[in-house]
Length: 301
Image (cartoon, rainbow, N blue to C red; front, side, top):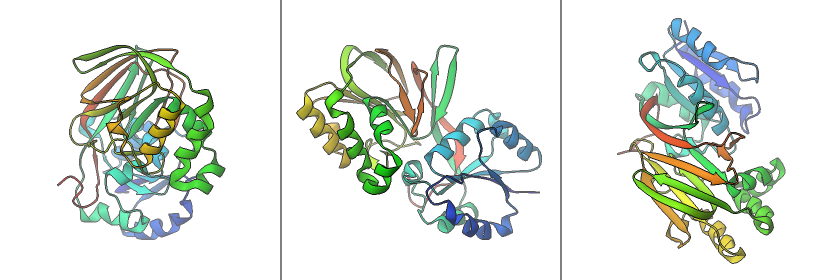
């Protein structure tokens, strides 16, 4: 009977390390499932739970983690297994926030050497039509266009600088979003903005620090609103973003809250942990301690 259910993404940046992970998990009686578009994740996880599975393993990048977080949130909390992350993606942003080793075989050791702890996730909804979850960052507005501009070639060539390179692609044609937001009990009306970031983790788009104060164990989401400006303002903000200094910019509004209510004209799309969704989120709510996860050493001391 498998103790671990391992979902692996063959399209991940370091998928060639899968054989090493298989060897490392041999003694743990792991069951392996390759991710595919037609795989019913909640059903697969429920079946494994009924057979004694205690840990779900995400062997992939942030997209793999996002898919499993959504599937696991469909499981009743009392029966929900723990989640371990083996970072095989290009960025592995949320794994970085959890201080999980980048070396896959070292990440495997956390499953035996430590106990999982409750980690927050974020719930987003749009009326009754859409409910989704994410673990790391929701990036909306022109941030989505930057993400879409980051082709595989740009990611490969520019590495961590890919977000800056992608930003250059959209600087000459920025969209202004007029938003009204309620951050906790505080409301901002008719703000002309460039982007909205709602963070649970610290980094996005390849370990670029966008929310240095974020913590997935504090029961809060970090809301970053980047107000509209001229071209030079946008260049400065994108440059500061690389070094995690842009929270001090005059054009940035930063709040730490439990919930966010957002209205935008035109409609604002978001990328959730790098995956672009067409639905427009309206409500963001933190779900404290939603999933027990394995984390690296001294990460939340």
